[in-house]
Length: 459
Image (cartoon, rainbow, N blue to C red; front, side, top):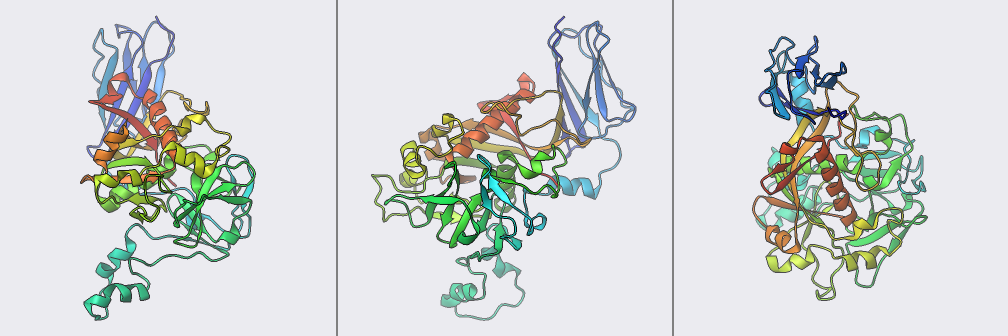
């Protein structure tokens, strides 16, 4: 009999108020295989083999302890159960599943907040330099203002946009940071240049007027970019670390997560926000291309729009301009230099295109395995839960794309393109790959899609 413990995975199916439990055994079940629920309905207990040791799994929801479990079928290695939840649904539980939180929102930041480079620890935002932090509004806020106003001034049609801009809610309205005031969105901070320390810019003669990459002066890690449109510096959250230890912690993770949130929780919040605002579940992650190729005239800028996360979303007008949407490796190297991301794997330099299909934006799960991040050997973003309610995550169908396949999806109905640094896409791919080991073999594929999990942030 194998000494390896069985893989046990449970997922809360909130829409039908059930908990799905899947157990993958190393050896076929026999007369020694027995399952039961704890008396409080919070744990699933398995006994298999002649050893007196049992395996147990904390369930992501409390089930009815009196429920009669179906006996395992002899000779099979994978067993499944559907367990009914105990009690009635509450507004609190439903609101938690539907909410969309991101690390480091403005309400948890203050004068004592300090951010350092995640790679080397150099001070980027000095303590006390930002006196006020403000959340930026949600995506497409300006366009929706006309629907929210009950009494709008009568203006001629040809002056509608100009009048809206003057009133502060036109589509071209922008937030301009001033020293001492920091703006926060789902994935980045928008700060005045004077409030950023130990940074340097990397530019080239061909760089577009909208972007100028920003590096850590000490380790040359790429931490953000100069946003000329908003006249400020935009810093990516996943490239920073907070030294403030008094802010709230993730319910499902260790205390370090409040000072070092994972890329998965940050991008997961952006995907969930796009789903809510656009009503879409299909996304394509493309490497951000911030300067024209040698074949593209410099006077033909990308057709880009900014969303709440501060990233740029491509709005191609035809498939023929696809080359203006993505960035090749040569462009990336020439933009940030060979020393950028100095402490990280060269694996990040391969150009990666990911297609994501969000099956469940918010789902709680629990498992009995410990996984290691494939890229760095450090614990993956999906950590062992410390909460009885399980770990909140996003269930994703995903696959890598060729340039040709990505080109076909650009501009397709029902698909949104999201531009990210190439390294961030590679890390998302690694998180999805590593999380598949939490699932039984039968649940790791769906047709030609791989199945993975991205951890969600919760307060």
